[in-house]
Image (cartoon, rainbow, N blue to C red; front, side, top):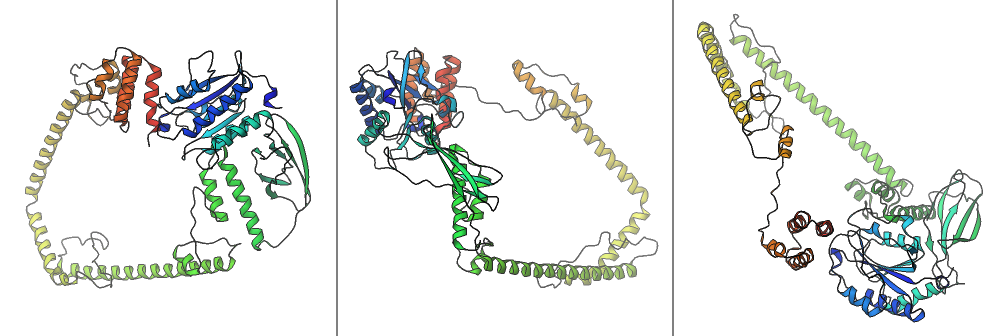
Length: 560
């Protein structure tokens, strides 16, 4: 159905006025909006324009009668303040709203949602939306989704050399029906015979009415027999053409290059479908990129030409694409693994041999030096291995000559301790007494610190500390409840109205005047997150303005 046959008295302009768009070039988008409004008013001077600003929420400009002049609309757009986040989910294109009958919408945005959901609800997209994007950094997937769902079109004003006049004429041709939004809608097939046919999502078949364009689909046959698929074409509102196609499988050599290219083309189509509408499962994208050898968001391309390069970077190619190289790499990896296992085994055996020799040597020294009245330590207890260098030579072998002398000194020390056993016991009791006294002092100190709030209470502190009296505090009830919980507590510094950039804002007589002062200060402090937090706190607590408080605070979501 042609749009000019529909009775409409309004068109809507949804204009992204978020913080991230303040530096973008808006010349071309304003030219297009002005041209479209002028064309509409030539056809129907009763047609009016509603302006909706898109920030952290959709804000309709308070003009009940709508804009009746293109120049007035452009003047209003030139005065727009770019502040706040971008709520892409707030883009709505209703057909009717009260007495207003909308023919179509002009949506100006980069599609980069910074708050809320990343795309609008499907049920909120009714009237056609023509998307204009003037930013190099954009979410074209979401913008195309809005255009396709509504029967409009997405125009990237940066990447294409399309002129403003051309865009105006093309949108007018679509409105009048000279160019249709005819395209692919859906595909039907038996899932037991065919699977994973791409593309799945609807797309427009561009061109004038009566022109033809080739479309390509690819999928996987699950059975070696003829299958039937049904492709439906039409507009977003209706299906006007159905094409039934019979596909016969051709059994060929899977090692042929053409077979690999077909599989790769299918994988690329699947990646495009996974990335559509903002959905990007990176794990699956990475697997497809690695399996079929192309670049995705999770993979990069490394060009290797020789077997040695594959081994150097430890990369195994696709066995189907490069069977000889893959087989040789697997063989070399197995050989390297066996060599490493033999090396480790030999090293362990050498360590064991040296350990045994060291034990035997130390036992000989101990048996010849120690008296029978003392127990000889077990062979494996307290025995220290010598340190060996990389060549396997003993690094401390020069100390072996003094080993007997050291053992004699130890023997004499043990005898001395045996004779003075009572003295030793007395020293031990004194040591335990001092330790007990120190422990009591530590517990007493902890008890005092817990009772005064110097340290958080813990289950390990004695019962005395739990029952110790607490000093009175001027903290609030919420603070007292927080102290009952165990663990660390983070105390934020309260808002300070004496900050330099807050003086002019706090002195303002009205909320609107305070917001104007904020915009002046914003040009100086927009790179500081603390600035937006402090100002939003002022609007929330002092001005009691949730609207301005949220708008200011959501600028944090737009910062690079």
